[in-house]
Image 1 (spheres, rainbow, N blue to C red):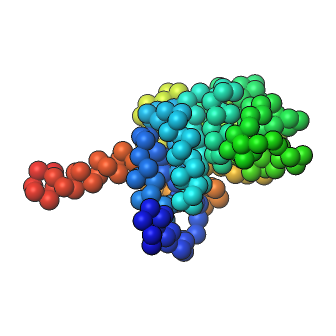
Image 2 (spheres, rainbow, N blue to C red):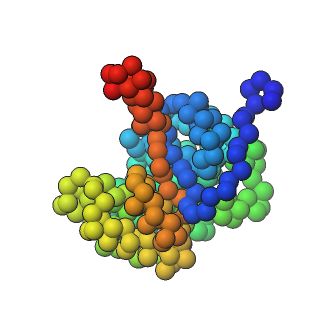
Image 3 (cartoon, helix red, strand yellow):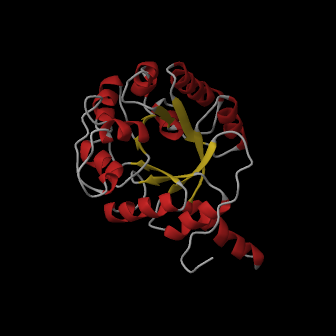
Length: 255
């Protein structure tokens, strides 16, 4: 393998949802390692991470060349943030803190070109830094995915209607915020949590859409697999770093 070449990705043998990880810092090495281990996708966590726009731009290109599907959980569900992510070439956007159907309708429209939505055109990576040909807009609408997050009581109450929006490709469950906003406190994957997650999954599937969620435990991963989740997040770069550093301490008896 030549210097600087991407490591070979292992052939995928597993079934079930595609496996993704959260990227919370500007770490190309984390993306390279994840790709070499066989992860399928990365989600840039711009909402809670420390990823500046310039870093997301080059990381999008790098990750796609590594063979990773790239999603961007933007900082807020507004036009500029959505367009920046998609113009950089991201395969999809995850929209946080959707409050209800009206909010979802307005925000998801920013992710699709007219006549489907209201995304603005910019001449950038997706257009080859040149003009757009006649079929570009429809093809780009098909290529990119828009996942509003269901993590508030209002969005949960209207999950079925949100899933049916033409500008929505899937639903992404935010179980931690959903537990907090539903008055259950910290997320513990309780029976009530699973009931909420099941409702969202069923809403997506009934509308012929995909769905995804974080799967921090085997029970949640099994739930996602049984109910046909498209992808799940199973780790993040900071947790992986913490685990590795903790292992070092444990080795010398200080863990």
